[in-house]
Length: 141
Image (cartoon, rainbow, N blue to C red; front, side):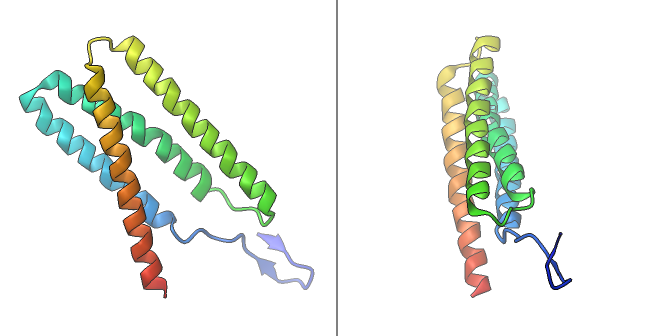
């Protein structure tokens, strides 16, 4: 909280879509777990690779969401933009690091299924987030 010159307290601006983004993350985590669990019955190695790919997509996105949505937003637009860029660069570096670890540590996992898990999870998360944010915007109007 900041003190205004008139003695009133002014709060940092809140981000109205935070709840929807975290709902999308939770739902996508549940979907990846269910698909991986079902796939374990059919083809364990492919399902394991799909789950790892999904985790590689979701973990950096969860970091970004926490970094951007849970930190109080500064009133200065340039500072906020720097925070967003720093969070995005860190998210991309985390993603690259997780892919490098997955490809070096788990050489047994099929790379195709790892990439399929990443792409399906990432696209699903983006579509679901967009849908939840649009629904929240409609309710606000």
